[in-house]
Image (cartoon, rainbow, N blue to C red):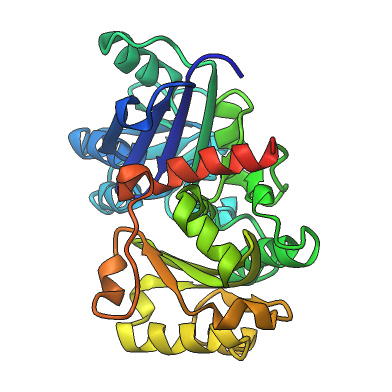
Length: 342
């Protein structure tokens, strides 16, 4: 692909962005750390407090819901298109039960509020003001629990990691989607918004970000390593040997302390942490393949993510992929694209 690639890591607090120009040193590529799209939506809802709102657009991250709930609690009317309503919940009857009416056109007197993880006009304006050309390609990652009617969202989401291990044989290139699984409704809408480019889960992209660093990738060939991404809401760990994934562990960051996490990781590295134990602990799960002896226990541990301080003091390494830990997911998308084309 000729021309620059706009790469976005869309989180709940920030959207971290790399504007990658082929042939240009990474240090000279433009980088942005901006408020997340959900925070922008929340700010607009707060500014319109008390006025009727009409939500339209696409399924996006729900980080604005606290502001919306405050608006509803104060008696502010809210209407939404069906597509936008999925940002609030996968079950539209539950969305209606919150007091939200459905309207495909803006009712008279209502203020429109656009919901979308990616808004082309915003980026066109920003890039134009910065004197940067429009991207030839866009890639993006975001967290998506997926839509799993009739079953637990935690189990449903972990099905993706099972496929990665059991069907893709741990191929990290398959962490990027050109064809999004049908249950990943947010990623599907994000992909449509960016014009069909590659998308990924934020946790997966961060782990790929570690492999973007040549010394870490090389270390995985010498012995097995553990890569952990401690996000604001989710934490995920992968066992990696020879740049292949041999195990996945996922939990909620707010439900574990340092001691519990270290204990889980110790057992995860040996393949002795059961799926059911993690799920009953209100996490997503844990799955490992038959771990090779040559991996020597996966003890070297690299930790990324905004809450990586949870493992401060442990025998771990805190890498900064591409020189900027905040952009680990963006560098991971670059690594994933390289692997797909490799």
